[in-house]
Structure formats: C-alpha cells, structure tokens
Length: 270
Image 1 (tube, rainbow, N blue to C red):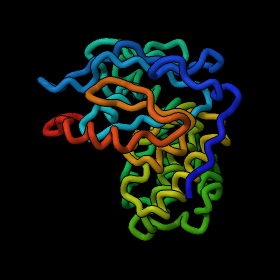
Image 2: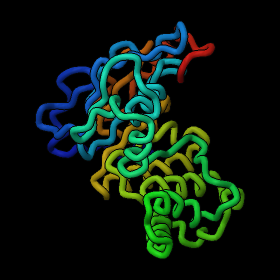
Image 3: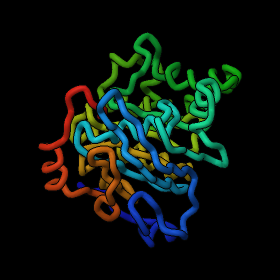
Image 4: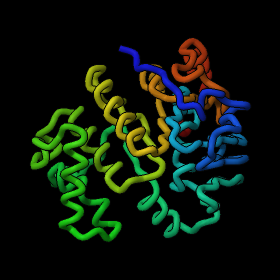
C-alpha cells in the first residue's frame, strides 16, 4: 500500500531549484559546492542542497551515483575536497574529527541498511548505548530506552539479542537507538534494503512516524521508489550531481534505470 503524501504548509510550495526548498521553509542544514573524489573517481561534482526543519527528504539514484557519499559528507563523516556544510550556524566542514564526532553524537541519528546492532547486547542495552555515550546516568538511560522501544511496539523484545529477533524487529530496534537521543536530523542509509516488502513497510511507517512526532528532519538514501514515496521531497543524484526527483515521492524509475546502465560502479562510491 502506498503511503499518503501530505505536506505541511511550509513544504507545500515545493522547491525553487534543484536541492533547494521554497523560501517559506526554514533551512536547518545547507550544503554548497560539494566536491569529493576517490582517486580518479569523482563522487560529488558541485552539489548544493538545503534541508529544512521537519522535512523528510529522499536522496535517490543508482548504485555508484554518489548518494551515500553525499549523506556521509552532510553528516560530517567525510570531509569534501571543496565546498561547505553549514548546520545551526556551524560550518561542519571546518570542524576537526573530534568536534564532528561530538556533533554526530548529540545532534544526529543514524539508521543503516543492516541495523548494525551490537550482537552481544540485548535490544534494551543497544538502545541505551548512545545515551550512555552522551553522559546520561544509566538509570535514566534505561528508562528512556524502554520508552523508545515501547513506542515502536518492541517492549516485549527488550531482553532479546538481535539474533533472536526478526529482521524487521531488529531494524525497529535500530530506529529506536537512532531516535533515543532526540536528534534534530536523522540520516537513514537504505533503511529497508535488507527487509522483505511487508517488514520494509512497517519499518518505514515506524521510522517516518517517529521522526514526524518529534519534529525532526530526516534524510533517506534509497534506490527504492516505495521508500522514497514516504518523503516530502526528493532529489536524485546522477554522476555526482543533483536533479529534482518526483514531487513528494517516487523518482522516475525509467530514468533511474537508464542512468544505472551508464553509471560507473567499479571501485566507486554508492
């Protein structure tokens, strides 16, 4: 079943250029002129992108187009060769690694394709870890983790380890872990890529619902039109450059397929 595409008044005006929201929106993160190469492979070629407060943004594109590289630059994991990323008055690209790590810990959340839960810890302990890293007392962290799991209908699985849960349940634990610190921006890299269609739909509904309930922003990297359809806005990366995707959701699968046949993937970025 396709998700309903409803936009807030701020987002209803759409975009005025590739990667830029309408002037009625409040920009929470801004990237300008991003270039990054891995050897001879140019992953990003002058990318400009604004992320607005409270929006769900999908970045789509074929394998090797540079979309995951873009996410990693936005989140401060990678430093571009040229260009800047500004967040809340801070130029992220000017920070050293320690400062970027603190920013990711306190301001951003991450959901990955395979969850990346710690296999020897229970669901509850996995969700507690980021709170402990921020200095939250253990008793308070455990209480917040239990609440996060309950919100995603996982209270009865709190004592289970990742191998004792289904893929969908484990991914919802990963979502709880990403959201428990109250991030302002959630970065999700192929969050449903390892799930079957039903589990993927449940995971996306939980993910988007939780993000919206908190008033946070989310950037989703995906090649799946069904996942992109949950977004308020979509941009597409092709050969390291941005173009505007379909309004409020699914990109042109025909265009993506055409690009996929010409994209260079060997040794290149995702």
